[in-house]
Image 1 (tube, helix red, strand yellow):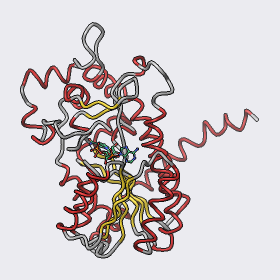
Image 2 (image 1 turned 135 degrees about the horizontal axis):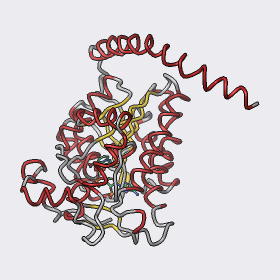
Image 3 (image 1 turned 120 degrees about the horizontal axis):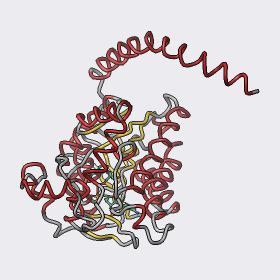
Image 4 (image 1 turned 180 degrees about the vertical axis):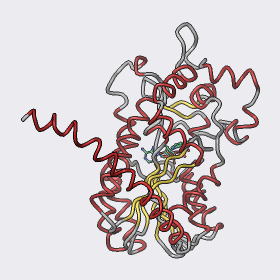
Length: 350
Ligand SMILES: NC(=O)c1ccc[n+]([C@@H]2O[C@H](COP(=O)([O-])OP(=O)(O)OC[C@H]3O[C@@H](n4cnc5c(N)ncnc54)[C@H](OP(=O)(O)O)[C@@H]3O)[C@@H](O)[C@H]2O)c1
């Protein structure tokens, strides 16, 4: 039996490499032609029913306004009902004809079943499911005191996307609808101190890439990898190693550092445009895509870069990463972070 693998080791790599020389240019041409065709046939969202989880703040809230501007009817889901009602009122002003608010916890399967059913009862169909609700962590693996604590994060980020998808797919099949997944660059890029967050997003990424294979063209899936975007998360909201939610701009500075933070509305506009065009993947800001190539070809250099800049060094406080010290020393924060994320006054810790 071992012989077959010896032969495969010798034969398969050169055959694949030679095939790639032909396949890559053909694939590039095919993608370009498809991109041009899709750019001229954007989906009309007026009257479409769009369910957004995590719509009470940040990217989800901005997505609600971007969809509303295109005339979509909305189902807004999150735990803070008062915030959802404010978003719903604004979404109507932006042009949404009807908005349903559902207070729910995406980590609870019964809640997910209920809000999908509420959407169907109210609107009669579902066209887009946007899996956006999420939380981040802000501590290293070795700072983990109870190793079961990060399960909560996995329950929100991973299962909180899988549960709604389970209940929504039969309805999305009927409407030939779409699933939009707000993953993260952290699903493939190293994110020290956000190690459990990155793992949850990698799980999400793999799940939805595989689901795309299973569903084929019946339900299209767009996976979004945002960089750092204006939201409560980039105001410093994160889970600590004891499982409590904190808002700490100092921690945010040590995690985000010298990476510029993008405006939420610009990001949402890019996402909705890409979804209407039927993009499979969206990275926003798009310049982050080059880092993927770096990771593939010079992974040791990228590893070193993130280790030096983002790992707290022994003997200094956990927030004193090199990237934060450069940020503080140069005073560049006011040029690369939106002013709105400087105030954490109205961020609730829930
Ligand atoms: N901001 C960034 O830089 C960035 C970058 C990459 C990816 N992302 C992803 O973008 C998504 C949105 O995050 P954000 O940056 O906009 O942060 P955010 O402002 O903190 O928004 C998170 C949203 O998720 C909701 N949520 C959290 N736990 C929930 C639960 N158990 N059940 C229901 N809803 C829950 C929150 O609402 P309630 O608290 O009211 O429930 C809130 O609406 C997340 O998946 C995040 O991982 C963000």
